[in-house]
Image (cartoon, rainbow, N blue to C red; front, side, top):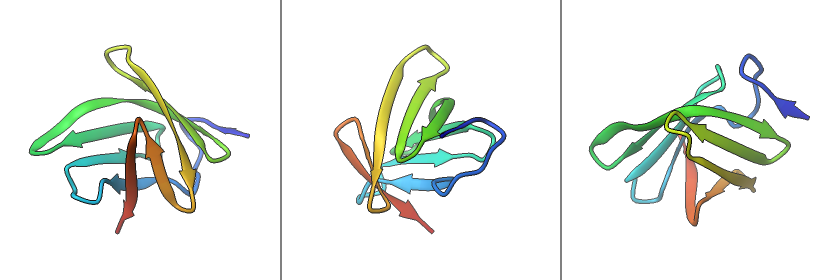
Length: 84
């Protein structure tokens, strides 16, 4: 099942690396906002979740993906943990 922009899924919220340097906020609208260090909103775009897999399309055209395993996001060689 693919979850589109107006749907909800269990992965909505803030995800961050252990050091807090990289933060992904998955918004309920199907948009995401990524911060890097002190650079807030470094990347923004849309995402879709299908099962435990997420696909990203940033507003510049870059694409990426990731997988949620045991409530941990594995994305582009990074490991992000749920915050809050």
